[in-house]
Amino acid sequence: MGIFSRMADIINSNLNALLDKAEDPQKLIQLIIQEMEDTLVEVRSSSVKVLADRKTAKRRILQLQKNVDEWDNKARIAVQKGREDLARAALYEKQTQADEIRTIETELAALDEHIEQLDKEIEQLQQKLNDARAKQKTLSMRSKTVESRLKVKTQINRDSITDAFARYEGMERRMDRLEGQIDSMDLGKGAGGDVQSQFDALLNNDKINDELSRLKLELSADNANKG
Picture (cartoon, rainbow, N blue to C red):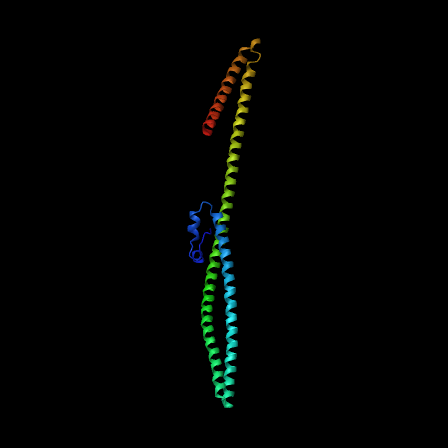
């Protein structure tokens, strides 16, 4: 079943309202365009037949008018020859042909009116089709823009995560180095050493412990932010 039941529905349709209610606007606009194109083909096909009928009617009128003139001429000849009976018969044929001309002229007027209506409807239908195609282009551009923005945003998020991991790993490496320095200071203590060296080691140990505590706090803060 089509979206529209007749051409008047297409001409009077509100594309924006239809698309606003659609779950998939791009799919719906494609169906609308297809139906409009099919309807336009049908209307043009109908107009071809009407135009052909009009030409046939005009050609028939020309032939009948020629016959009228011929019968009128024959009636004149019959009168001139004193054949009133033949003149009457000729005038009867002339009248018959003239009556047919009037009938066809009435039909021709109706055909002209029909053609004018078809022309107006085709114009309106073509305009609606142009609007639908423009709307389809707009929807396509919006879809591509959204996809592009989503891709960029995803990449930014991915880069942010990568940077966060890199910072975290860097801080862990610094902690490893500091802890290594602390451990290295304990090496050889079993063998003793002078008093000054032991005091220096204690001071260095305090500085390293302070730096280590700072790094641990930063790592803890980073983990809390990720959570």
